[in-house]
Image 1 (cartoon, rainbow, N blue to C red):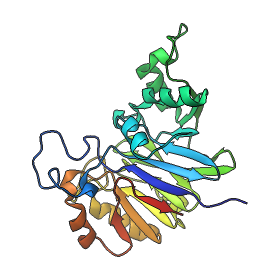
Image 2: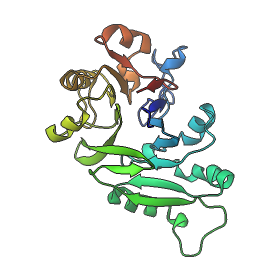
Image 3: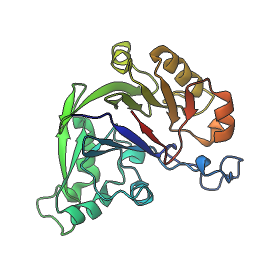
Image 4: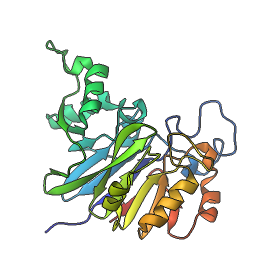
Length: 257
């Protein structure tokens, strides 16, 4: 018997995180813990599998804060540093479980990883380096264990990236547009987590208004906003401004499908 997944938002902030270094705005100085946002990442638990979406610079802190002691696979949305630069820290899990971690990404992203983490793939390998097995994916469905994952093609300005649907849950970050045929893959999701940088329009990310419009088109039972910048405002204020069934996500929030 299979079950529906759960998703925990490990980070809901932008590439700079919130608070931003040196910023004294009301969001960056807020005492509400929901306004403290690490770089965007999420953890899926589904039919005995523990899957991570993106491993940015806050990976270590996120794993410790969420008390994650095992990880089966990492799915990468794209190659930007706020989504991949924490991969070196999988070493701790390699040591603990004495096995490599499976990394799923598009070939272009793999090429970037091989360049940025060249020591991992060198012919003569230094002891104690991260152990990872790279698996190529594209926009076709793929399986991890008994779980079928549906990739969603989106665009981060002109850069093609991937979102993912896990059963009843769809997760998309860093998108500024999604082709109509890919939107069809999302429809029917009970829960949609989608990026919404700020109220004003941005070149490479959905604004909050754009995210709301897309959510209304897809019509999930519940939607959560992620990849929020300090320009999105205070979490408590966002809760009051957003339509019914849409909420700002926050670090540590767990949602069951």
